[in-house]
Amino acid sequence: MKICFIGTGYVGLVSGACFADLGNNVLCVDNNKEKIDSLNNGHVPFFEPELQELVIKNYSSGRLKFTTDLSKAVKESDIIFICVGTPTSKKSRSANLQYVFAVISQVSKYISKFKIIVTKSTVPITTGDKIERLILRKKRRKLFEVVSNPEFLREGEAIRDFRFPDRIVVGTNNKKVIRKLQSLYEPLIKRGAQFFVTSRRGAELIKYASNAFLATKISYINEIANLCEKTDVNVEDISIGMGLDQRIGGRFLRAGPAYGGSCFPKDTKALTVTGDFFKTDLSIVKSVIRSNEKRKSLLMQRVQKILSNKIKNKRIAFLGVTFKPNTDDMRESLSPSMISYLTKRKAKISYYDPSGEKIDLSKISNVTYCNNLKDACKNVDLVIIHTEWEEFKALDFNKLCKPNKFKIFDMRNLYSHKLMKQKGFHYYSIGR
Ligand SMILES: NC(=O)c1ccc[n+]([C@@H]2O[C@H](COP(=O)([O-])OP(=O)(O)OC[C@H]3O[C@@H](n4cnc5c(N)ncnc54)[C@H](O)[C@@H]3O)[C@@H](O)[C@H]2O)c1
Image 1 (cartoon, protein in one colour):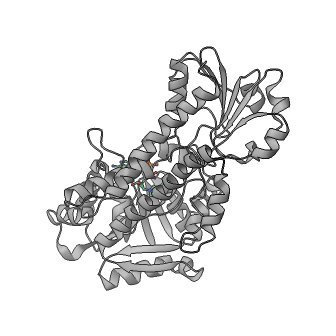
Image 2 (tube, rainbow, N blue to C red):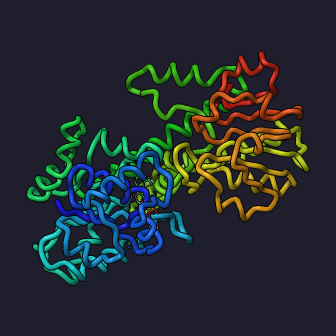
């Protein structure tokens, strides 16, 4: 099929490359010329495992192309996927839809024969209705169909998630469009993905309800971890014990820092705004947001306590700064606020992250990026394991941090509490 993705970010590029790999002709569009130039030169401008190879393979075959020319993409494609960002608005907690509507206003100019317009961006319930009304100002009803097809991939595992999704949710009641999308997704359905068709509004809400539910699970186990710390119980036992109940399931029950990333924080906030708009108090989601905010300050106080309230001139190494491993995405990661908190109190920070140096952190004084673990950990008073990258899972801390008397705060519970204590480390973790 001939399809295009407008917005060539984490979602647009991964989906574009993967659909091209399935044999479709794909045009990826972005208004960021630098990004498109970089892709046309064979370089993926962000880190996602296997993506670089997949892009090069499909670009070379001619099935995957990159352009800033939106009119060409619309004219040449039967299905147009909208994949632009929907961040939190600057002035409120709602989703900022300016990028979506800007794209729609452009797209509607160039429609001259039937197009399926699919929102993959996460958009609040009724956005599809608004998009439809906007296009109707310029084009006749029979020239287009607006469909919701929310994306569920996770950064760091995006390609695997695309290839083996649990479900593909399609929101439309147009039978012809359902058949077309079903045939586009056929290779994934054959591998076992559920193809679930619902109303457009239903699909929009499924995405928010799912993300808010996962955020709730994380916050829940984080609060239980707080209780474990006070009662000498290991939160990992609780997670296992709970997860063995198939009604609960073990995933997303790992205690750690506050949830972050480009989706959960903004989507939980936007969902409560939608709830308020429709005069529905989503009190559970609201309290999850509060709990997550509280967790950030709780962890900062914890670091302060580990350092016996003496932060001034302490040398602290951060291992990992991204919100999760296998991505370079810093959106809503805990590390910048934690590092600012510590440097304001005159700590000296070094950090190492396998995905490289971060602009967000270069603006903070007394923060040094090290391109290897050894330099980051040399002579430090405290090591904070912030992100669970593979390479942090079996470290020889004595060699890394010598000769100081250092402490370790493992916010990801990567090491056995018992073993670390036996080895004589000053080791602190979460909920244990
Ligand atoms: N990142 C994820 O893990 C993930 C997962 C599921 C769903 N989503 C949702 O998908 C959407 C996109 O997220 P993302 O992380 O890929 O965002 P992103 O910021 O990585 O990419 C968005 C891209 O859109 C481009 N863009 C903005 N305005 C444009 C315009 N007028 N014309 C062409 N391009 C334009 C930007 O330059 C950018 O490259 C969001 O709604 C997000 O909530 C994201």
